[in-house]
Length: 144
Image 1 (cartoon, helix red, strand yellow):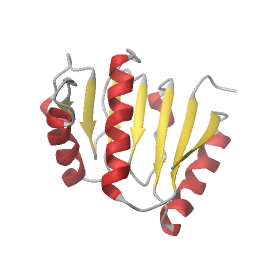
Image 2: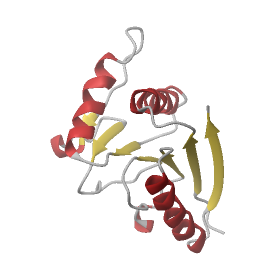
Image 3: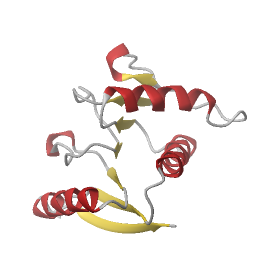
Image 4: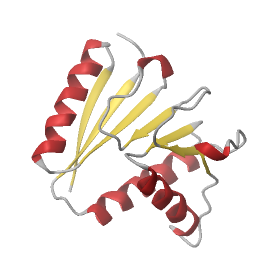
């Protein structure tokens, strides 16, 4: 078994604002606990831009240094992108896209965000099988 852990975060409702607030807290936690280089894989450019904007203003008392992958700031501990994958070592990936992450990236952790809709759950099942086939350690977490 590879030493890569995948956590599927399953949401009970389809409230996007609630789901994204959870993602921002997950990013903040990873940054504050110094999990290493974090990559947020957005589902599209619009979502990547939204995350970028929100990380500047998410909490007034907390600054989360980050950059858009297309801006190529190698000093930022958090990168956000959607189409091309980063050409760097990653410790954590937060995946909001519909695709399983590329096994060549070999992060320590992958967080899969799973909305409540049936089509997204179906995509999550495909990802689960993909990761299981790669011998990753898989956990599941229900988000209330």
